[in-house]
Length: 381
Length: 162
Ligand SMILES: Cc1ncc(COP(=O)(O)O)c(C=O)c1O
Image (tube, protein in one colour):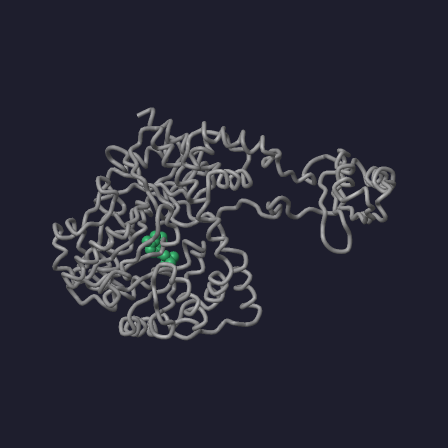
């Protein structure tokens, strides 16, 4: 047979998100709480910078690692989380955080390497590990512990033998964050067991209770961590496809080798937008974060009122209530009966079963209506 | 931000929320919100709750103008005294003391251009301290109170995404 996908691709199922997308698309009265991107547009100043760059004819490749001007802005920007990275040698601008995750996996994973992935989490990691020839090692987290990853859970899952860990906090789909103490415990486990960490911190700027703590800032962790972030979430720039990776010079040099052969450089127009975003759009980010935070409190309090058990999500733009029972059936019936689309938790790994991912990246009006509909649905059960 | 500031910031984006929903969004209870609103109103911080209306979308013939006013003060009369007198006219929608070439910037509304002109020439210009008025009729409103009238709510995101 021609064009037969290799085993790794053939064995990777289509994402469970797809099914709900198709179901939701069948109707036009749906309020969607299933969207994994902000409902805002990119800040106007960033958009203008992109337009100006196009007008000025800036349509060629940039340096492989991204425009130095942008890397300098990134270096300044991440100081707020205690990071110190050299723009010349320790930062790589990528086509979305997605590319950065893929690069890290293809750069550091050897065939058969075990990569610990806490569950539930963002859907791309496990397939990414497999595409890179590694073996994903699921590590459960649960509502009983606010979906925080612990050394105990790592140990129990056999992660002491893992080669790497993908850490994603603030977390998609749960909205969980980890405080400094919890991060320190995981860091110690990684140092003791010589585990490298790929830290996807794309939601760092959307941390509502307390401060975001990066594992790379823990003792002896900088040299074994690649930090990944991007412009999709905090700057509402999903469609511009821009992210970045930060780490020790050798690691970034190695990732850049894959990047230079497979991507050449990240989108140029987006890089101009990002430079301006970092220079002048902090206020827009704060405004978005304030709006998200209000909606977060709103949905959490509505869930409490309707008796759906929901731990206090403190980051990103997701809440993760328990729906009691089969989450897929719940989500399907909710969509069918009340026209509200949500994503069943089990899509994000077995640990997500019995939960729903509720994205509150939706205007207050729709959010209110959606919550009322969910309340009716829950009441009728 | 303290609770009062948060409440103000929320009201300034949407004053139509009911107290229960405001409380949920601020992570507090309705009684606290009621209390804060009472306080904000009685201390004169919150002066009203109004809709932002695009009058051009209605059948109304409403005409509005910005009027620059120059004044000459004397020993007995300051800006405040003059402002108090001007503010009493219902046709005056807003009144501000500004820096620059003129002293007051006011917005006047009426049922026709003639009505507005007449109001300015018969009620405002004759005030003894006013030395000059310049009237700018508003031809088109693109943005008001932070709301861009050109922005439509078209959400083209995928309905469900990772
Ligand atoms: C945790 C996480 N990482 C990465 C991404 C992808 O980000 P980007 O748009 O920068 O590729 C997403 C998007 O949903 C995400 O939720």
